[in-house]
Image 1: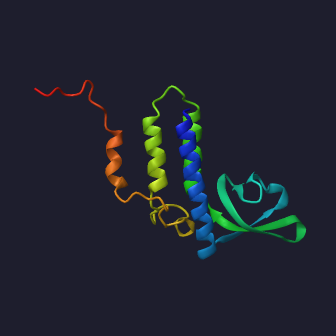
Image 2 (image 1 turned 180 degrees about the vertical axis):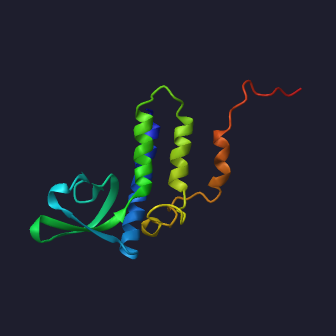
Image 3 (image 1 turned 90 degrees about the vertical axis):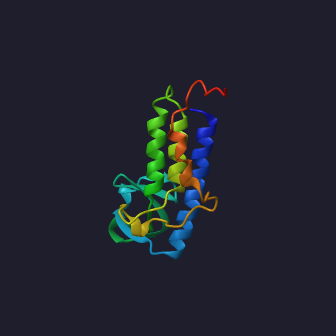
Length: 151
């Protein structure tokens, strides 16, 4: 996998995490209660895996009988990024163009009401949003080879 793809992934992930934290401070985060032994940290103190879904943790409260209350936000956009990275890591011989385009589309996507956890997801666009990025769909088009000749 090229270094550019890995770098791009980490930049998108970092920007997304910043937006998620801002969103959690402004909007209603959810509180989940789980047993302490069920806690599966992805990033200690910041992110857990909860029933197969990523959950960004804002605060942790210890409760009675070995339970923990976590306040935070389900992170569906980062789940998409991780899934895409895992798919791509297993196939090094494929072209990276479509992969980078998919990463770019995910990074610039807006959430819709049809998505699960829409009310929990950040609906703000990234700080580095490109206003006309929708017109970049031509990246998926095939390149004509050889190029047309001018007569």
